[in-house]
Length: 412
Image (cartoon, rainbow, N blue to C red; front, side, top):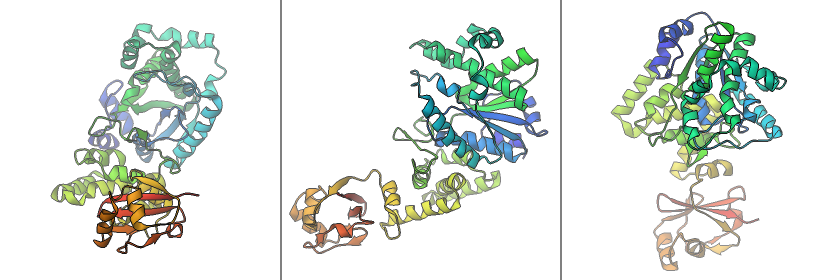
């Protein structure tokens, strides 16, 4: 398949500025420069950004040149959110966030040229910006954009309202200075993208190209990459590779084919064969396992992907040997925990921490081989649990039955 055909098959082209046939000619033609941008609202990108980074890599792999923008200028303003204005963050934090994001982008898209719109905006005076840019964009045009219309109901500041002009100017500047003839972004950026296309046409009398990718959602309609209200970060110190692996391996059957197309670089033939195997034996979850391994490998490397598989298998089997406390805590975030401060008989530990409702029930669990500590069954009700039994001196893992886990955190 050509690049355009591949992107269409993967469902990665939603809105197109101009004619789709013209976009196809450019994508499948001679090498060109394109750009994608993000604002430094945090010191790490998250899994929701990953589809855009995959797109940048796809175009780069086809021979095109990625210019990836981290918005030091736009990040100081904040793009309009659907419900409320973004919090203004300090310049120190903006700069720290930029450094973190730039390092991630360079790792994930090695051929990318990294730019910061603060470099060309910091000396641009307000009067000159209004004269050069504001003059060419009609307010009625801006009011017609979906995100602006929604925010008018609750109120929007002039700073947020102006964001569209800033991003539009970014496109025109990069067109002039970097020969970026195309912008790629998520569909929520459509209004900002078309502003740039219009500025290039009106100011430069040139044709620019742009398309958006559909926003990737989970079955409940939430943005992909959100876990219990929290972002899954690409920085492994904020979100472990295992957590990303687990999020993906739990992908719904109804979405996993879409995710394989969007988030992996497997070929059409490979994906179709994997999905065929999945449909024949859904209990194997081969599609989810492939998705999780491929994504973690791309973000963090094969060693981390293999480790995530190992951690997942060991935790599922209740085998904690060879696992670090970090891996165990990462894999058992939702497990009830308690502080373990003093040596106690196992029966008392179970009752005091509501693992058993009474001493009688505790003894029944123990004599029935239903209680294990750190993966080893204990059937002696007089067994004393001590701090020196803790893994790495930090945690004790209690299991009741096959699935109920509890973590005892050693008090210092």
